[in-house]
Image 1 (cartoon, rainbow, N blue to C red):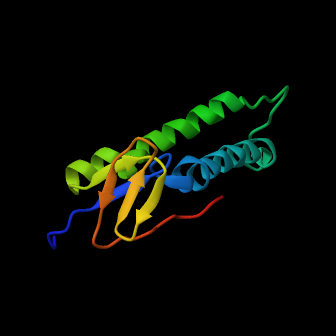
Image 2: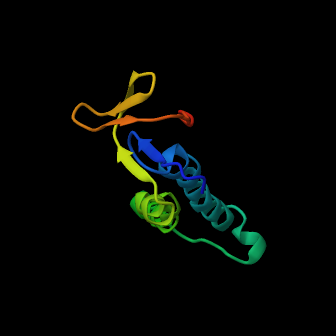
Length: 124
C-alpha cells in the first residue's frame, strides 16, 4: 500500500442493500418463482403433469434466501476487511465533527483523518 490507514464505517449491515434487501434476496425469490412457473405452467411441455393441490412454502423460500446470502456474505464481512486488508471497521452512524474529524455513534470513537471518501451507496 501507500502507507495510509483506512477505516470503514457502516451504519447497519455490511453488504448494503444489494446483499441484504435488494439484488440477492430478490433474485433468489425470482428463481423460486421461475421454478414454480416452469413446473406448473410449462410442465406439460416436458411431460410433467400435476394432479392435485400445489403449495408454495414461503418459509422454505425465505430459508433458501438466507442460505444464499450466508454463502456470499463472507465477501462483505468485517473480518475480511480487518484481517486481509488491515482496515479498521466500525459499525454505527457517523457524523462529521470537524473538517478533519468524524464521530461514530453517541459513545463511539472520534477519528481524525487527512482524507475522507464518502461512499453512501443507494437507498432501495
